[in-house]
Length: 395
Image (tube, rainbow, N blue to C red; front, top):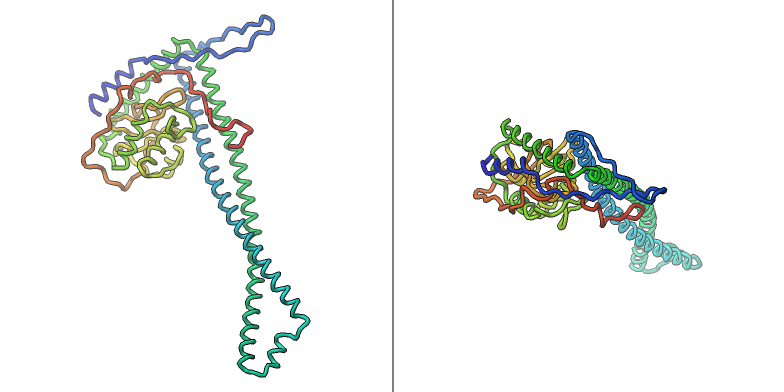
């Protein structure tokens, strides 16, 4: 790791940035006095508070990724329902045409029933050539009738099968919609719990929390560097370079759960959109990115790779190089550059595993606020999900 990065990491580890202190949560007035009761401060040790907050943020991100996964499956299911509905509509039109044709043949058969049978007329024909033509016509009519009946039978069976499949697909869509609503409510519940805890803390406690967290990150980063597990890295591929530069351009934009740009992002929204803008589609959620993309050891990390965190793969960031990542950290923060060890690392994946590295690579230029900003501490959470449907409405 270069000395420049080490100095920057060390500076952020010992500097407590400006904190956005949340306003106290409104309490219900006392029925007797009409005044709000005094807020009860949280007097737990800072270490315990930090553990609690980190756990709450982790649970909120887990819920966010569950919401994202359900939303993606719901989109796919809606596409499948639309496809089956289109096929069913076409099958029903074809069935209607078959019924019309069979009806025409039935009426023709009824009109001919009072005349001599075509076969008798064939036997009585005097002209052999005429008899041959009539026989050919009779055979053709018989084949047409048989085909019409087969079309009618097959069309009815196909329409019935498609109707059942469409009904099953719609039921699956409705079940996913309910799961999406539950996941959305779970995220909101987690964020409300975090907001209440933050509102119970004093400015001094918030400052201590930020300082303690930064010190922990610096220690974890130093331990990782000294272990030798993190390689010197190399140049990205052309796609990795484009993905990383897009992510760098998003620095300063707010974290918002379920968001994938361009105004706000959650962690996997940033990584998936960055690689999409680079020309490669990758899974939307951090769990799917970890499960479906090729893994790469930390010793071979190159810029643009995705670093995945926590045993459940509930957080992800883009590797910048020199032991740093670009990430959308958590609610209440903004997209920024962080030490790679800011969270417990699960591993790394490479969306373009077969692509060659660039020969002449110039790292992207970072804004001056990339490493340290007003969102480094614990501040007011961004209002959650202001655009998504509310519970009880369609997603």
